[in-house]
Image (cartoon, rainbow, N blue to C red; front, side):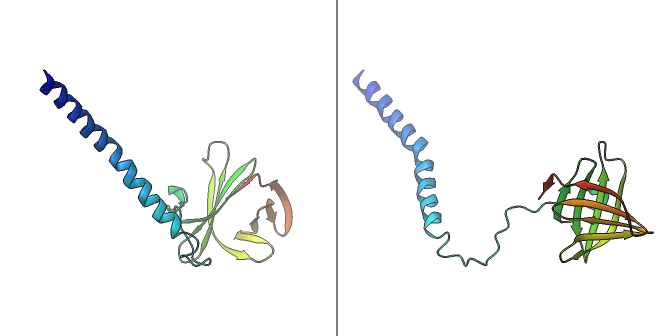
Length: 142
């Protein structure tokens, strides 16, 4: 009877040791990471958290910027140049993908047959032949 009880205690001890061992190792590794964080990494070294992509209809290109207004989702995509991918809400069935460029002090600009689409952190402005025909405030910018 005593051997059975000793055996149970031994098994319980081993189980507890194995159960807690990974978390001890993880805590040690975490503390090593904390020691090498900001001091060891140059401040100008970029850290990529995750790569976002534009919708498949735009070619699934890497996304460099995103804007949302009441009426549109606007993706700025990149592949050997910038692309403006504007999607009309609410269902996303109407969309346009155009070559674009970044204009300092203005935002991203895309032109198409007399229409110009200009988007920045404040607004999406749509011009026809140089005249403003629609302006939507940007509610989200990532």
